[in-house]
Image 1: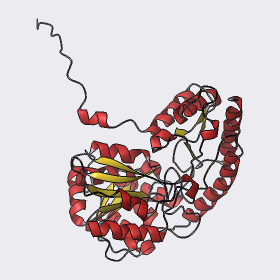
Image 2: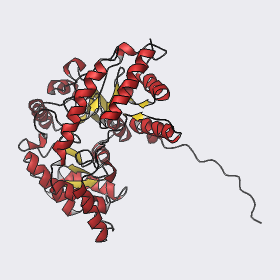
Image 3: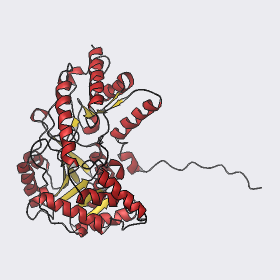
Image 4: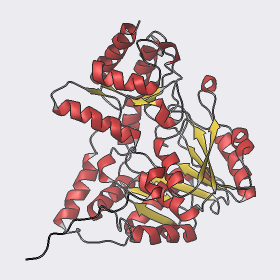
Length: 401
């Protein structure tokens, strides 16, 4: 008989894993899902996910791909057809002139951001991130060995970012500036003029300007804008995009990057050893989304505007709560300062935990976005759910005394 072996426990997880945390948005969604599976009636404002179905023409394209047995590997960075659809759509909307070789297709928008930081950052390189920021920026910079440099925006001014704010934070170690406009979580939109000023500042210093265009089509005033439309900006502008929000395709997991070819090749090297290609069928669906009718977008935007115009005044009616008016995206970012320090609640995290446990409403605490007085609510859900959830939040705050 083989003698019994007493295993020796391997060492702990890697040091770099300790540099990042679980996505706060994902955690809240999971916590809400646990309650739902227990039979609790939860109103979920946590997920930044359109409640609209994927348009039928896009779904039919996927069905055709299946019928044609388009189910094999594709090139790791996506098919030429998908890349061409991305660059053609970007050119049609913003006047840019990228080639397919300057494009990579990724497994969602988050993936391309991860690829950028891994391909470009060395230990100690600084990345400027405006506050409030999307939860993932901080963690992917930390994971790549970079250093986050946070730039505070003014809530009284609608969290609007200016080029001057960023310029004051630039040092010889600055490698990348990240701008997400419209912003998740605040809905703030950087003006075209300020964006262009920022481009000229970063370009002169050889700093990459990474523009996260995830919500670029959901503006309540004006037209979508890309700083890549500035003449000769290709060498230092990095674009991160996705079909997830624009076409209600969150689960299809297709994102893209537009950047200098040498950076695309560096990211492709990484992707070839991690995810390999994005799903073949989802790429066919994305081609139809980008090349096909665009009339679903103004319909979604009109509905988001209607919801915003209901949610913001309703939040402002809650005792101790204020809220700036989002200029884009589909989030409200209310300030709870006047409602905290009551009923044993000291922080937005306390508030979010108690709200879910006692009132069965899921929101994301502001600590995840770099602020200490806020929570984030997604209004990408039905008016019925918005009414129910806001009623519950109002009653919960009043119960705190």
